[in-house]
Image 1 (cartoon, rainbow over the protein chains, first blue to last red):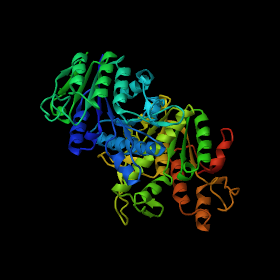
Image 2: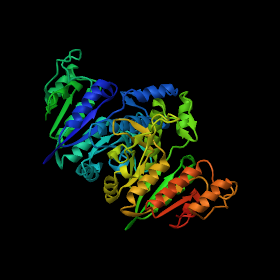
Image 3: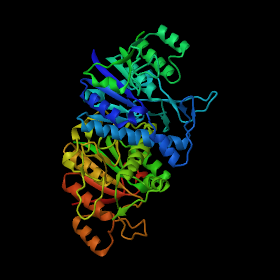
Image 4: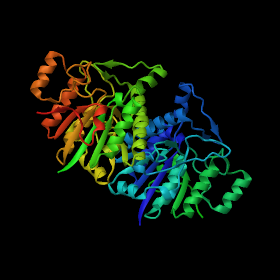
Length: 261
Length: 261
């Protein structure tokens, strides 16, 4: 089986020019098939403030009304995605910017309203990913760069969690490749002590994860991220690593927290 | 030779929901290989005004400073492009949104400063279009939807005239296909009397073009559009038509002004 590396970069990497340059240098030089998935960053909030729209977040998730959807589509699929594509092309990496609507690679379902109406937010499932189309792009030597925007197939774009996009693509392509999924954050990995960047936990399995949640070592946004990671491992993804921008200084190896069953 | 239809839609079509729906219905149902190229519309100017940035136009061309480039990238490559892609997918048309940076399909050159510094504006040439990559997308059954943003290969995005993108792609692909290039405006074609939508000139050749310019029948933005059209015909494009949104009501045939040598 060929290897496939999927790197997801979060907003804090996108917002830090030196982190981002480092990551793009590493990613461009990485041999073999690869996919970049990116999140949002602060730019959408800055633009919303300039336009007098108040961002509404519940549990770290954005409530997306029609105006907010337009702004995240502009910022994620337009500004961030195309800047990344241009800067990867500059490095000789044949990047192809995509949302889930493009070539229908990621169909999504508008999140059903239970307690909270998240608005134009999409839930994605690995089974719906168009693996054949992504495979064709990879076979052409192209490097997909995925923005966290999907669609419902009925003409509506949807704001979608980039971590879930990354893990869903990883799971869908695990049938064809040895997939190495990497979540790149501003922290150097999962930290034993959130104040100490040198306290990276080198390996987490489900048992230790549960213990870390109980003890509070792992909390907030890191919990769904690790749950996504375990789901990927359980579904055939070969390796999931959570790391920071420093991880990419080394040759090939990525240093961070490795998630195991 | 297979047939390829390239339709370019301008801002006035994008801004009119009924025109746009009609066009998207027609385009989706059109058999064979096809490409959609879109311009900008009023949204970029509205957003600039909301952000307190004054649009600067010289001879109908936008002066693009860094902030303006960010806004047109957001609006053209993000909002407009992805909405079009989602609405084509809704109609069963497997659209793939692209800028010139994506898969490096349209490398451009930053316009040299002579009398006027246009800023981040790109000039494109048919010889530089990545025909092989576009052909691969078409062979996959995908329908490229091109936004008027290109890149210089050195990490810089460039604002680019959509008419020129359409004619450059048409010329580049004329080696492989019988290309039918269609410019869709808000007017029904080139009009003998600009006040009378029924005065469409059915055919224009170079001789009559020169006469129409001298007599003032053809003026302003229509002149470069027709020059682009003649260049395309001279370079092997089979047919160029300038038409309005009404042209697409008919079955297959497109009624408007046909450009001939």
